[in-house]
Image 1 (cartoon, rainbow over the protein chains, first blue to last red):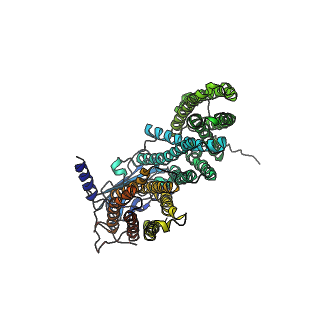
Image 2 (tube, chains in turn brown, green; image 1 turned 120 degrees about the vertical axis):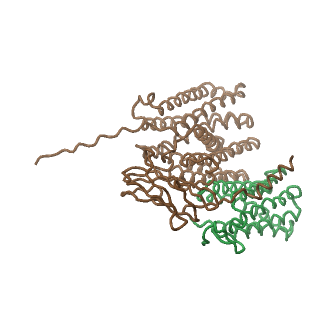
Length: 435
Length: 193
């Protein structure tokens, strides 16, 4: 049986079933996200290799999904395929294309352009359905990874401030290492899911889908590139810190991780929606960073210090208890600012789906704050006195952290939801002054 | 962005250096090579660095999903193998099982080459090179695998070095669209660069 499997694997690798080619786009007309003042008469795609065009190889639709293109034909140049367009009124348009390479392989892509208006990003092309439940879970996993990484590093550098005992140090590195690997892997998965939705392709064809309009033409894609590079650097710094036992590398990893976490704030609602400004971007980043430090610190206390460094429990817990209220105050203040910005009316909290998710999140935050308050009022005096029950505190810390993780799930759904539209300001009345 | 082949040539230089470091160790002998404390760190740290440098390739060359995934897998396995070898040299990792990280990286890299390029061997030069590189890495995994059981065996170390030099030569031979042995499939397109 094993021999048969090995033989099959060998044959699959040795003899690809069919010849696939990777025809890549060299240029398009209109170009990606181009805003045109005059309607184009044709749309075309030029490849680096000869391709075969079918009659529906290029389909252009308006924002209501009406097809505005004619049948596609190959140009005199086999690298080119083009279609004629109807007279396009002002509006946003989506171009979906697929081409058959001469050897039978299909390459696909999507892009957008606007006539008299700005083009939407390709992730909002006609046909894209927006974030799904899978994307909510993936974003949640991303937040959890960020929490383990940023919170773990912050705890080690700001709370513990010295080397941990060897077993505790080893677990600290395992947890933060898990965090950075999760951020990298989940980030790639999140990007591919968003690309799949924009391209509207089954998995087999997505493998040869052109991702460049999404990678280079959207805030999401730019954030993906920057954050992947940033967190790859963090993974290297974290590994080197473990290898050579130099704390300065941990500081570098912490700083780079905090800086690149801002990619989420610079590509989400706080940067893209109406009413956003540098203040909303900053508030979002502060909100996210404070949440990561608060929850990641709890995880480190419960899983590293309590079981593996009992001699540090008192010192670490009391320092954490001094920092946590500051983090929570910052987190709540930034969160309230962002809520007011995104929900202009109080009634939006129960009438809009975004507001309803926010209410769930606020409810969970209240539970977490009550739990934290209980730790502050009851556990802190016990820890100060060195009461024996302190040994069992790790479960309660994990409980608070679990509620915090549920808050992150609500935050993930919230990030993927659409806030209600901002009220349009009334135009200023022109005042006529008689001479 | 630089053309893809230029990026391949940069990594070819990296693999050539890797191979030469390992060959130097085999030729000079382990005792001589380790007279300088930094030398044992040379090739693993270089492999780790090449893994870090592969991430920009992964993020900036996104003309197809499979390209992105393949480059991402190379970035990760090169960092993983380099990190494991560095940990062993430094004495931070003790289990000999960590030595399996390098053959694992060879296997994953080879399979990524083969899956990534699905044209037949003689379709064009880059297809030929992808197949060649893929099979070199898959078959060449036998050397780091042997080294996992006999770390000081010169044949295994020389084998790894030769695989790296071979990979480097193959990457240096890359041109974007070019014939191989005078043959170019009419389906591949016009030669350029």
